Structures are given as structure tokens and as C-alpha cells.
Image (cartoon, rainbow, N blue to C red; front, side, top):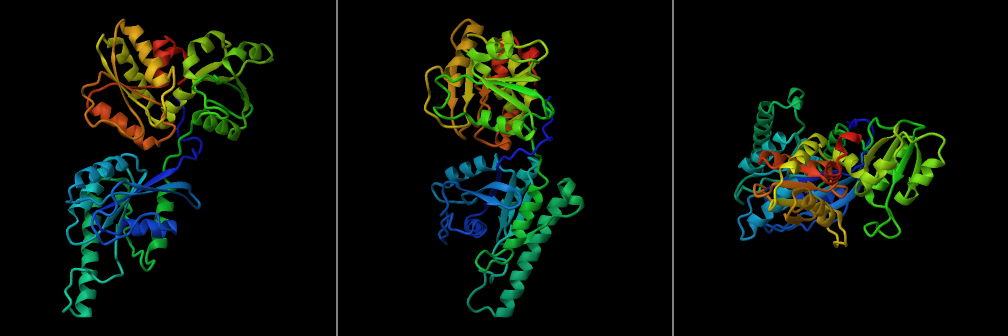
Length: 424
């Protein structure tokens, strides 16, 4: 298996902001981004769909800030908004939870959710240097100041006690609770520094792990067929090539029809051949005996997901029968093409395997059913357009419901009978 902690990935870190309606999430994001990303209003439920802002945070690099709809929204659309907030939660690398008011049960439930998912949490107390809004007009300034301070200290105590009971490693050294007010800028630098600190401790997965060293020759076999975008390469190819360059490997890129001739011209066989999964069998027949073989999709199975679960899930293909129901999960929205790998090629291979018709459902983008129990198999794409956390959440959901899940490349290798002959 590839070592996933060998090389920095360069993947964008997803930072989600959560809290009750009107807790100040949008204002905090605007202050961090230095521009009006989200609409700010005193009216409950202003943020409906998640709002995304891509930006660079030095020194951690590219980040995606996500403003979510407030929890506890009792309006007619509140249920739909909270469902979309849950989808954002599934892909967060870091969760910023904004606490506000005396009743913080909603925030604490969200904090527990992320702790169970092993997602780092930054608790933030909003409006920290502003007067407490619960006091009437007849209250003295002293009462207001004392009440605001007591509210903040009480909230911090509850958070710390819950964190200590969570059993997380960070509980030994304590948790940083950040007091902020984006209106005045109070605490915003501290929040940014805490994001940087936590991001520095996140795992940095590698596509190639220890498969390739400096000076190794790597051949990339890349079909330029109907599915290849005109004038450019697909993201898994680009990302893999970049990591090969960073590793100072020597790279030879060929189309499948030029592979045989290219091998004949080489003095030594490539250390590794990386192919498009669709031509796995053809490349396997041509590869030198000493060359390792894998595919871009198989590499991404480990880079973005859990390759052991995918390999185990592929074994379920043997048990599929006529009438089986299969879910194809694409992570990007694209106009389907003729001979689409997920919608046509793999389903046709499955039909050939079972000797009859199967039923195929397709979801695209970030859509993914909550109830998976009606499916006999889930086929997940490489996930090049989403982060690893989202793919892992899908694998977890499938396993929890007892539904086998595998990846395009792993499934093709299994169906071609070469899964045990390729490098994972």
C-alpha cells in the first residue's frame, strides 16, 4: 500500500463555520476573508445555501471557507437548510463552531458530532466584546458588563468540561476557545492563528507514497479518447504528474497505441507504469515483467479514500445477480458522454459478469443518498474534485449500512481479473 503521509498533498483545506442562526458566522467569515463573502443581516435564516469562499491563508496555502445555514432554524425551509449544513459537515477538515447565548445545546451537539468524526474543532464565542443583547434598556452598564462576562465564562466552562470528557488527545493539553467580535476585529488574529496551528497538524496524504524515488522512470499511459477533455489533461493526471516532478522522477507520457513502440525504445524498463483504468488489460499485456502497474484511479482510491475498503467491496461483485441495484457516485457534475466510464462502461462490464440486466442509479456532485440499504453495490469515482474527508464519510456511511463500496479503478481491475497483479 502507498504511504499516505509521505509527501504534502497540496489539497485545499475545507474549513466549515457552524452555529445557530444569527450567531455571527457570516460576519466572521467576511472578516477573515477581508471582503463581503456572505450576506450579513439580523433577520434569522439569512444564509440559506452554503456559501463558499476559496482563499489563501499563509502559510498553509489554499483553503475553502464555508458559511452554513444556521442550526435551530424554525422557519419553513429550516429542515432543508439544516440538511445542506450536514452535507458540508461531512467534508470539513476543520470545524469552527460559533457559540452564542445561554442555551448552547445545539452547538455542543455539533461539537460532539465532529469529535466522533475525529475532525478538529475550534470553539468560538461570538460578540465577545459587545454588550449582551439579553439585557433590557433599564439595565445599568455595570449589570450588562458583568452579565456578558458571566455568560462567556459559563460557556467556556461547559465547552472545556465536554472536551475533557471526550477522550481526545488534545484534551490533555487543553482546548483553545477563541473570543471574537468581527465588528471590531477583536480576536480575529487569534482565530486565524488557531486555524493555522491546527492545519499544520493535519495529515498530508501522498498520491504515490513510496512507490517512486528520485531518478525512477515512470510511464504514464493516457488515452486521448472521447472522455479526454479537449486541450487539457484530467485532474488526476495533472496532480500525479506534478507529484512525480516533485519527486524528481523521470516521466514518459504516451497514448496506449504508442506504448509498445515506446517500450522498445527504452534501454531499461520503467519502474512503474500508471495507466487509465479503462485500458488496464491492454497495458497489462504489454508491460515488462519487472515493471509495477497501477492506474490513476487506483492511486486516487488510496489518496482520497480507503483502498482496503474498496478492495473488500470489489469482492461483492462476485455475488451480484441479475436485477442487482448499483449506485454510481460521481463527485463532479458533467454532461455525460458516449461510453462514459461510470454510467456505461463499468455497468456494461457488470452486466457481462452477472449475465443479465442490472439497475443503475447515478448521483453527481455532492449528492449522496442517506439510505443506501436498497443497493447491492456502490461504485465511487476517484473523487478528484472533492476532498478526502467527504469520500471517507461516504465509505463510513456505506459500511455502517452494510453496503459494499468500491472505486472505479479497483472495480475495473477486479472485473478484468488483474486486481491481484497490480500495485495498490
